[in-house]
Image (cartoon, rainbow, N blue to C red):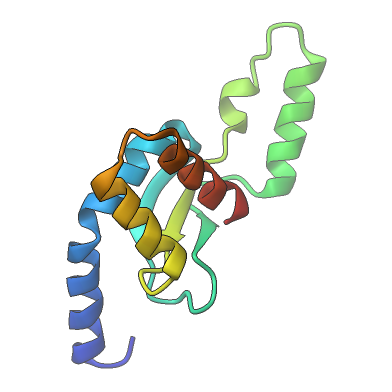
Length: 121
């Protein structure tokens, strides 16, 4: 972000999408650490990025393998991916998901859209 105008625009868009961001966080629960409006996505609807203290995918595989090899599964709690879901407000997918959230938030098809977005991010 180079200019104050761009920063101002991103803040406005983030505020506009705040209801969707909160709703997505509720829908995804423990699957994500946070949901944010992204300023860097161009073509993709969403992406998952590691949080500051998140584990790399390799470490997650290692932790899952350790949990599977122990009887008590002591490592299972640490193996969760606490990534941040960044959404692209300019994407048609996000626009349609926002519309679905506003009109049919409890519909099974709307919840399926959320899971598809998460799984393809």
